[in-house]
Each structure stands twice: as structure tokens, then as C-alpha cells.
Amino acid sequence: MMKKWIAFWNILVKDMRSYYLKPPNISWGLVFPLAWTAAFFVRSGSGFESILSILPGVMGVSVLFGTTSMLAVTVTFEKKGRSFERLLLAPISLELLMLAKTAGAIFFGAVNAFVPVLIASFITDLSGVDWLSLVPVVILIAVSSTFLGLFIAVSVSEVFEAQTFSNFFRFPMIFLCGLFVPVAALPFWLQPVSYALPLTYGADILHRSIGGSGTMPTALNFAVLSAFCLFLFAISLRNIRRKWIV
Amino acid sequence: MDGQGTDVIRVRSLSKSFGEVKAVCNVEFSVSRGELFGFLGPNGAGKTTTINMLTGMARPDTGAIRIGGIDCSRNPKAAQHLMGVVPDESNLYPELSGFENLCFCGALYGMRRSDRETRARELLEYFGLTAAAGRKFASYSKGMKRKLTIAAGIIHSPEILFLDEPTSGIDVASARQLRRLIADLNARGTTIFLTTHYIEEAEKLCSRIAFIVSGRIETIDTVGHLMSGYQDRQIMHFELSDTDEELCSRLAGEFPDLDCRVDSERKIHVESSKTIQVGPIVRFLEDRGVEIYEARKIRPSLEEVFVKITGIEAGEMNKEQEKKRKG
Image (cartoon, rainbow over all chains, first blue to last red):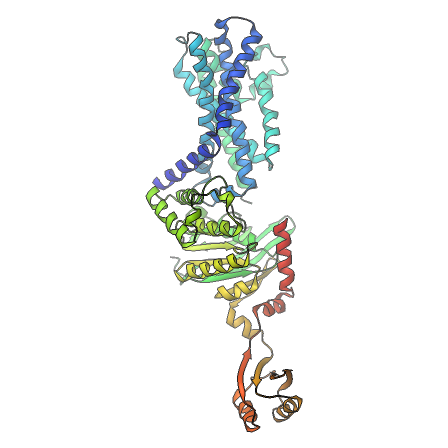
């Protein structure tokens, strides 16, 4: 067990050093949520009191982009450069290996989500926030988004394909998952698509935790989001076994 | 162990197809503990597919693999503890230094920090890379990259080392140095499974060799047996104080089984389908006042044996490999 933990920890630390804690990514993690917050704040045309209404959306987008932007690219990059083979040859299970590879993205995405919260804390009152559900849901959204990124990374063979395929999922999710536009306000034929996306359930908990305005029971949201995490992880592992260990 | 003698690798009826293409077909062999086993064949012969199946990077369609007594089809991860793998292309992390790369590879096998750092320093010293330990891998020369990749393969002191084309694409001096290091690793007890398309490399390093062509093993034997088994003519070269055509024809007259010819000013070439008895020839020449400087039995090269078995010219194989490497 100790040996497996050593392997897990070192894969995580290496990825954090090599990919996530680089100045461009740190600045991306700060600038991106700031830009989104500013954009929606200006668009809403209201005062600081509207910050709480746009905070769930900005947090959701920060997690989604923070996790998928790096992971989809780094796994594809390492696979292409064959250094990923070195990991596959290590005597650790594929499940543990992929958890180690994704842990960095989960951490990075979760930290990204709290950048707008930190900014908001200086300009508005956050005393009504339900932290006990906010923190777990941010982590769960980070996990599901990371596994979505993993699914994308395993489905493609080129780095540019990973970026294109990521955007194919990410941009529609901004508008379909109830982050800024309530799902109920979408055309009825688009609503089933919303409920097929994991972020919809995470966004609902974010809204309830921050503004107290969720539409679905929190327990159901957590359950569905967890099921999405398991499904995306399982299907990614299946694809790795099928495509990379031929 | 597996209770089957000293075999650390046992492969039985191994087959693998990619669609209609049979990459590996009914391959069987064993490798003993401490052996340096060569796996030779042209491009597309099935060498890398076989190595991938042995190391758990590919699943066989049929057949059984046991590494150190462990059934790889049931528990490939347990077998991976015993092996080190050096792929045909260096696949370490360009952004990490040589020292960091080795430490990271040690961590993948669960080595503690102090153990992996000590071992990394030892290996850097052993491979002559201490001065470059802090430099990023991306800045290494090809020869240095190959050395560090081999070092990474043995960081956890594996029982078995899989080396896929270790000297391909590097300069002659580095290749010679690497061959010495490989021989030394083997002398220290590491079992080595070596794939190469350089026949002279296999001849110098390997105790036994398998020739694989079109996914099938054509032959497996010791280098000595391979060469003697495929030598249908006995050949000797004599270096003499004096020689001419007349001496040659007199020699052929005295020994009807021999074909003789003058090779150069002082050398004669003697060939026979039977064993050449050196004593009577020496006496015959001395009786005629000819001094013998050297009498040498000529062995066929492994390259000739390879050509005879596979029908593939070794030079062509090298060219194919270089083409593949250049993309």
C-alpha cells in the first residue's frame, strides 16, 4: 500500500510541477474567472448585490475550464510522446494511475473555483453561503469535469483534436447547464440535453448553496453528479484498456 | 519461482493478430535466469509486438506468458515489479532533469525518497552522466538519452530487463559504450531480453538468439550452435612464407577432398565439405620447405547464418530500420 501511495503522490506532484503550477496556468486560473465575473457583471448592469447571482455560474465555468483545458491536452501530449507508456508499465493498477493523473486537474479546477469566491468576499456579504454543500459540490464538479476531460483525452490522438473536442463540450455546457440561464428558461426541446450533462446538477447545488434557489433536491443532485463521475471514469478506463493496451 | 528450472521468461503458443494481419504466430521460447537473450528480425517481424505482450502493454490473442513464475495473463501488474523496460525510443520527461527523471521512475516502483535518490546517483555515476544530472533531459544528446533511458529501466533493480533496439540511431562510440554497459549489467546478474536489428551486436552480446520472421520464430539456439549448424563447408586460411598456383594444385592433388586456391601473395584458401585435418596439411607444406605463419579456421558470421535462415539481407534490414527511425 505504501509503495502505491509513493507512486500516486509522485505522479501528482510531477504533474503539478510540470503542468499546473506554471506561471501561464496560474495567471489563466486568476485572469479567467476575473474576466468572466467582469463580463457578466457589466452585462447585468446592476450593482454589487448582483454578484451573488452570477457567482455560481462563474465558479462553474472556472472549474470546467480549469480542469478540462489542461488534462485533455497533457494526457494526449504524454501519450503521443510515449512517456505515458512509462506510467502504464509501472506496477500500479490503471485505476490508481488514472486517479493520480487526474488528481492534479481536480485540485487545480477546485482552486480555480474559489478565486471568484475570494474576489466576491471583498465586495459582497457571503455570510448566507452554505459552505457545507458548496465545498463538496465544487470538488464533485471538478471531479466530473476532470473525468470528462479524461474521456476526451482518451478519445483522440492529437493535442489539437483534444482542444477542439473539449470546446465541443465546454461551450454548449456554459449555456445549457443552468449556470447563467435557468434550464427552465431554455426551449423545451433543449431541456433534455441539459439534464444529460453533469454540470447541470452541479450548477443547481451551486445556486442553492449561494443564493438558495435550486430547482432539484440537493441529495438527488449529489447522487446524479456522483453517478456521472463514476460513469465517465469507468468509460475512460475501458477506452484506455481497449485503445492503449491493445 | 515457477518450479520449472531457472527459466524467468516462459512463452507458450503466443499469437497476436491486428485485423487480418498475424503479427505474432504461435511463438514459444524460454529465457533462463542471468541469460542475455537476443530477439532478431526485420521490421514488422513481430519483435515489438512480442515485447509489448511480455511487458503487459499488449494482450495476446492466445498463449501463455510466465515472468518469474507469474502468469501474466492473470496478473500482469505483479510481473511488472520484476521487469525493467527500455523502449526503442527514449520516453523520459523532457522537462525534468536527468536526476529528477530517475527519481520519478524509482517512485513509480514505490521506492522511498532516500533509496531512489541514492540509486539515481549511483546510476548517473555508472552511466557517466553525473555532470549532466541537473540538466533537462530535452538538452541531452541521443547517446545520453539512451543511457538515461536504460538507467531509468533499471532504477528499481529489476530481475529482467527488456531492451528494444538500445543502440539504434546513436553514434558509434556511444553504441560501443552502451554495449559494454549492457554486457556488464548482464555479468552482474540481470537477465536481458534484447531486440536488435544489428546482427553483429547480437553476436557480440547474446548467449542465445531467436530469429523471428513474419511473426514466426525460425530458429532459437546459442550463437555457437547457430554458426556451426549452418556451416556446410569447412574453411581454413593459411598464411605462408611463399605460395603459388603450383603449390595449390599439388596440395589439392595430395588431398582430393580439398578445394584450394591462392587468395593473395602469401595466403591460400582451403575449403572442404568434410572436416579439414590440419596436421597432414602442415606436414605436407613443411616437407616442401614452406614456412607456416598462421593457420586459421574461418567461422561463418551470424549475419551469414541470418541470411541463410531468413533469406533477408542484413544490410537491407538495417536500411529499413534507419528509414523507420527517420519517419
